[in-house]
Length: 83
Image 1 (cartoon, rainbow, N blue to C red):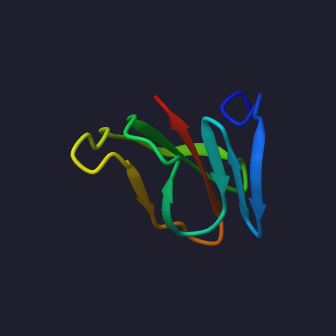
Image 2 (cartoon, helix red, strand yellow):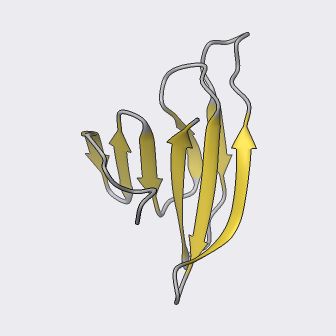
């Protein structure tokens, strides 16, 4: 929960909450915070909600937009945090 909060919500879609510095999702897809900063992806899996995987995506200075391409199963959520 400490990686989910505090969050200043900017947008909400089915299965996706986008904040100023983090995204919380239970959907697969490509996610960005609209800048070139590095991202850390945390993937949690049920039923216990334990951390299954963690990885860093380096900032993309060339394009100016860092994108996290995430594949989740029905039992997972991802928290993407600006590094």
